[in-house]
Image (cartoon, rainbow, N blue to C red; front, side, top):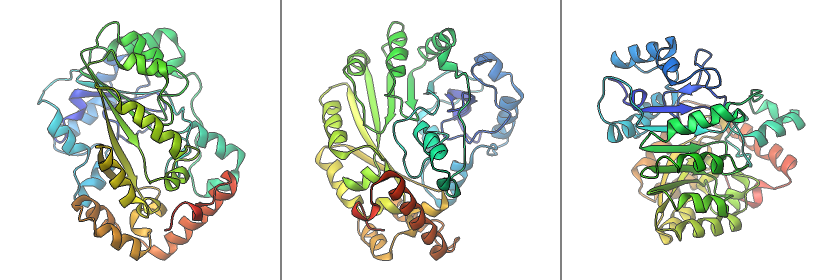
Length: 356
């Protein structure tokens, strides 16, 4: 069996289709949540084809991230599945990932409209940015807008050992609060995992989370201070740090930092790692493989050399990966042009935030 995820996990994508894992790159053949239930997904041609590949020890058509991880030699989703999931021959719900569409209050520079409603709106208002991005329009009639379907998915998720909420940004617009208010009535002996940019941590959410046995908040932070302000605009470091301190005050909440490693991250990365150590927060990084003009190896050599001095084996592999595959000078020009365009549109000068 190539991967354990498809027999243990169920994910709902930004466009509202079922996926076998949270890293799956979706295609046109996946059943949508609005019109199909779990049983119909498991009996679909999509799922049957996927399992045929997995049982033949082959990647599926949407396994692009794991293919890149395997090439770069880092431990990614495939490895995590081996560690976390039991061996099975039939599907049973171990954990579930929920996305409330592409709703998000941030326009992260490496993200797309697929995962950010703010970027979707920015694309419409600034067509010049589309030379750097793929256009995307979120679907009409999202599953979470149907009260009955919303309840159906919440009840399904309450049967799992773990629910992951990702985005977009799951903590905005109150959808996470409403979802948890259903789950908490049926199961609190479970793990709640939230991937968040840390910009919002409402009182209502805090009250809900205190009722669960185990809460893990994976914070998406890609630079220290002003660097993160630009990369994950319009989030501000001062508010982010206050919210994290509040999260850390709860005994049942554990925070981790997940960095999407890219050229813009490297300048302040040593400071970010030191900051994590000072707060006793676990830190991890995964490479930005796309867009290709943001990859880590595009930073200045002296900045890259300073990261090598950290003696982190995973970082070293990610810094080396793809460095000989592309024309570095050509991609650096595109990267700088992208930063300049964002600086103009968003009124924040990248040169005041980091060096690259």
